[in-house]
Amino acid sequence: MLSPTLILSEAPIVPDTPAFLPEEGAEVRFLGTVRGIEDGKPIAGIDYTVYRPMAEKMLNELAERGRSQHGPHRLFIQHRLGFVAAEDVSIIIRVCTKHSAEAFDLCRWYLKEIKTSVPIWKKALFEES
Image 1 (cartoon, rainbow, N blue to C red):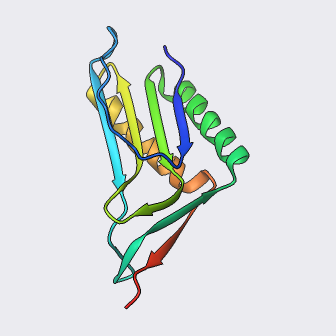
Image 2 (tube, helix red, strand yellow):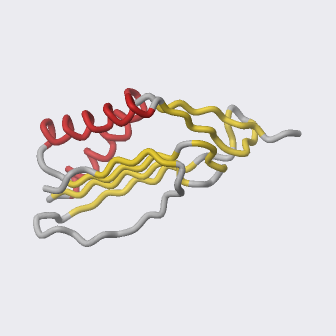
């Protein structure tokens, strides 16, 4: 099984579709975009900040825990940092497994764990009236 790809970057997220490995039968991909409304008000975007050493360590630990608790799978996560405009993609999670149910469950699990345990902070930047 390939090592997970875990990226924290200012670079835009460009979803692609790599080839399946012989043991894979399913891929689930989650794209999270910045909503244009926050607390009922229009926003220009979100500024994402991170304590990179801790976030990278926690992402790696999360991937390791995912493998030990849920079995072998291929994983790609990219989370944007810095300013991300409304309607732009801020996170992508791709999970490839043997079966579709596993892929859906794992993708949801990774998203929940990232949101609750990885030190990535967001600040909505409201549009000026």
